[in-house]
Image (cartoon, helix red, strand yellow):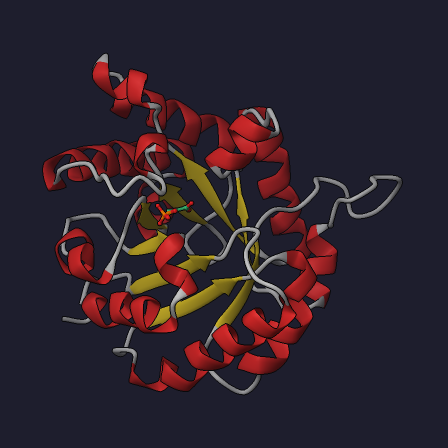
Length: 253
Ligand code: PEP
């Protein structure tokens, strides 16, 4: 077990109707007791299903998270959800800066920084996502890109009690492809160095660094054993409770 423990987070994205969400949350909750010590489980259902998923995991160690939040606490922002609303629904975490937000909604580092700051304001733990495009990787700029995104997206003053950062290479998300273990290690080392530069030695070392991008039960053990990998952000495989729980089990293996 790594020193910081592990966070295994499931990003359900825009999948499932209420019955699906209720069944999936209940199945994760039913298996959560078997998760190894030091492994925290987090589910991030669509906003529409947060309340019923929250009911399904009530009384268990499974935690609830949002997939995005607005930077403001409230106001005339049609279709958005505030960090305070997520907190009110029982969330502990919120994903910000996912590449599907950065690309699909033109969200840049400055906005991601403001969203992460909003999460801190509301008492949520932001999971700040960073990651290079395939072109950036091919041109040898993966570490540089990710370090720059960390410096620009992470609010200073945060530490591991209120912040997590996820490395999600854009080309690995939902593609079945993953970087090599050495490539993941190199990027996580660069992320750690960027965080230490931003937050100082102790705070920078205390932040959990998650890897995301085609994590499955079959590759989770080796990915989670990489130095500076303190958890996983899981998309597709989090939609099957057995796979999600299998990834959690691999964290303790
Ligand atoms: C994600 O989108 O956060 C993700 C990691 O997806 P997948 O696991 O499906 O690659």
